[in-house]
Length: 255
Image (cartoon, rainbow, N blue to C red; front, top):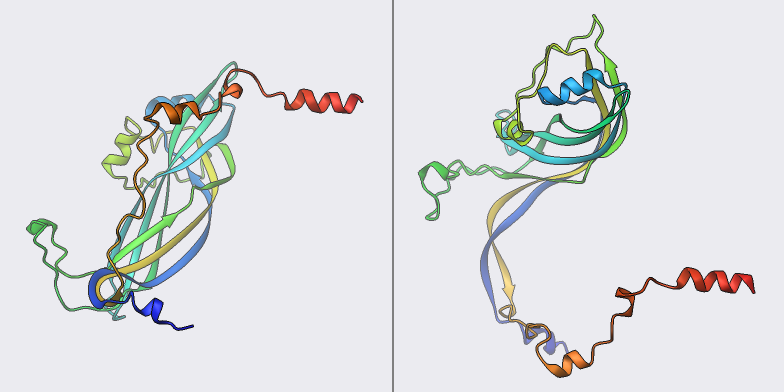
């Protein structure tokens, strides 16, 4: 047996422009007691609430900023700002309300992204969109957060809630109104677990073997378009009658 069958498909070497990953890391973050921010209407409901329960948690967006580190050539500082949409059921004395709140988590890490002194210009971008300094791209892959605990807290005299975070306008608009930071008597904290993978990639030209073009290997299925195909379909009885599995099991048990 020869290996010619495999090598016969090899045609030539070609150069492709692709993304190469220079550094990658996985993180497991325990986000303890993140404060939730509500709109003015929802905050007034929280002020009257006696208990809360977190129902859902999802990621609205992750802002990723990358900057070179001057004293470490080839390394970059990566800032990540996570914005979460937290679905909360707020229980009042005689009723309950479903509310949505914003939680924020920020972190910074150092990763290797190689070094390049060239600048990049492209015909498909205008001047303002050019990535001229050839800085690599930081990419974050993140799973949905896992809610671990939550609490409804009364503001005490010793607490400092005066730290107002900087929140982008599009995040504020997502909740449909201004968020309340100060002058509250109650606030909500949540604790979450978060898994994420961050990698730094850069556009490079690589020489790779070329075997063939990626041609389709089958025809598209255009659906049922003939009487013969329709006649061969089974009648969907399960769509008209409930399943009998539980009835059959009980009958067997009786015997």
